[in-house]
Length: 559
Image (cartoon, rainbow, N blue to C red; front, side):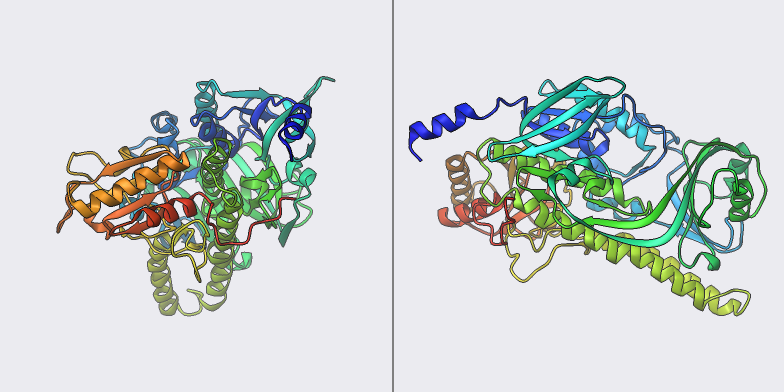
């Protein structure tokens, strides 16, 4: 194409309203907007609701999720919005039969893996999280929000994406234009449908109810479990599906998920008795919300179609078991955000945007198969095999073993990108959610925190782009040459690189636990490469592969 022809093509392209259009202003859409906005990318968020909806879903926020809020400049604000006092605790509990029965154990003890993350986990209703994210978005000049607008249609071409939106309660419509569009608009995603992205759904043929209610009496009954905020009740007749009860605040407001018979409505079922039966005692109940949903898993067959991406529930959805949904969606936002910014700013390679699907889809497939669906199957098998009324000793031994297994499950949930084509040493490996927490720096895995000789944590020194951690003494000749090679190659690529001197290694120092002298860390705090030294060509290959210029996984079709 000649220069004149290229100029004519550019002149004919519609003007952009923003570089990235985000449909859906829930936690995932807002998190992505912050990630992009802080990187100087212009964004428009289209959200149908004027205010966050007061349904207390998505409450458990992992340590990893709180790292996102730290880097988004909203961690303190989020913790201040907590609805359960810090001193009470936010732990979980599993019970057999009823909550007040003799068999319980601690469940989902995420504090067990706290040493491997920079921040502590948190718990608060999703609407409170959304309010904090909206406030942070309002502080970013490059992000514009359109609340109260529905997305009607989407079209893309070689230069960008156009979406048509309509103001709710009005006849006003607008067409927005951007270089890319992201659907974070929930399980019934208009963006996914309009982009032609298919999905695979696994139905479990279970109708579920969500109850939100007030009860001071229930708080008094459950004071015997101090520090617990959510409760999982296993009953044989439910065949592995849960009755799941949780606090929204301390002392009065609760939510409850459970299977109900097909055809159940608000008027033909005794929900108060159902609650009493799960707890094992009667208490006062004042319902605020009664809703229904079908228990199913959904995974999109791809997360990208040309210039259109999907994230969060638009890309994957599942029962609200274990708090995986909102946390997975926010990780989508971190993963996609820096890659979109790198592409728009010119330092992302051809394969970088394809790596979003290649990294995130296998992780969620593993989350479904290795954790959520597996837990239903495991619980069903346990309840069929063990019954305290039939063989109390055998049941109690198996119950104790389950309690120990619950500890192992927390340690095993460690999403990683070992099989990603943009991390070093991925050949023959696969990405997934099942792994192991270690302090060792491993390509494709989350970086563990480490205290530096300066008194700061390494997470407080990471740059907004890539970071090169140097564990040995900064004055050593071989190391100095490797560091300079990375600096030079990063400059030639236009890639932002921060060099972090972690001080001398040595027995007992926390950076020594990384097991490498040089560690290349991505903008999302995952390790891209580790080594003891690097020549100019080695540094070039490490950096180019990390930004998708040397990706070895097959690129997805542009669509």
